[in-house]
Length: 212
Image (cartoon, rainbow, N blue to C red; front, side, top):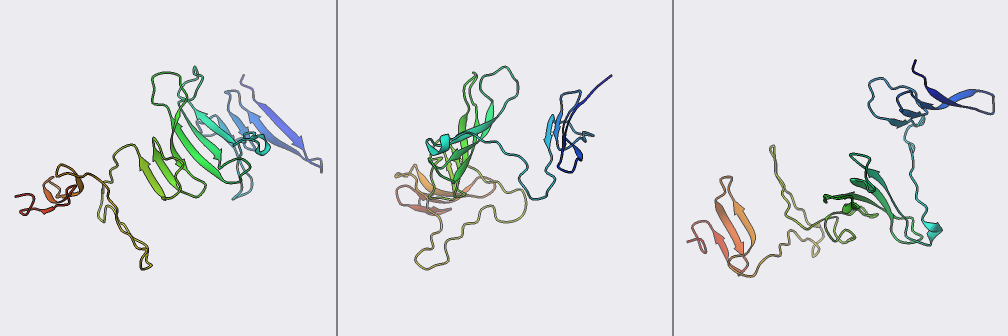
């Protein structure tokens, strides 16, 4: 017959409480014993709402080094390094500020994952292969093209500058120096170019220069 292993503690009033439960199939519950319709292997229940559920901590050397740690995620167990991880990194040594990091492995060998996304301590979101530490922009993408596709009614992209006079900047586009380059190109939904701002400082509108 199947058997489970339960861990109990006794409080100062002599009451016995089950604090951890190890099921026959390897599932572990901390402060919970209900596994009906659940497929996961480990669960921790916080009895008080709006409180920290669990914490994973790395020893940062009491401020002598920059603290870093991560939770590895793997698709199979015969590897030294995880396939991906979610990590935490201290802003510097002896700092309370912390960054949230995400890393994936894009290699056909058992190598360490590479960081691809970082949410800085100040809330900046950086995606890509470089500039993961930048803090001057709220959102930063580096290393590849980006696309925003609308699937319902409404504006696909909205840009609002600062409301203060002299500090309101809309869109900055930096690209190209020749007629073969363009800083902006506008097309209709069939792909026909209707307006283009070229790198050689020429602006073209359909049926006008430099299109004709």
